[in-house]
Image (cartoon, rainbow, N blue to C red):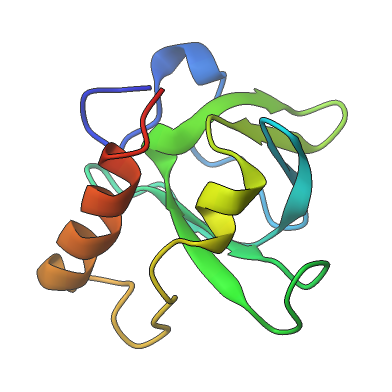
Length: 116
């Protein structure tokens, strides 16, 4: 993963401007959900993942630095987290996920502590 949790690792294969909505998200131990929204903003790139398979209506915010690899052909995003780590992440806050520094510090801190 990158030094900045909010930026894509160059080895992940992300190309800025690629629409990732609908891509399946694969944790290290299996499928966890699909991308509902994403942003490529410098220093604040992220995925909003719908965990509908696991918890009806629950979404999580995954910083771009958690992405290991993007498979465009299969429309899959592989992240360096387990299903449990993702399910246990801070509650997604639809009103704070864009531009709220305190919220980004909370979420980023959680994922920093779970880096491989």
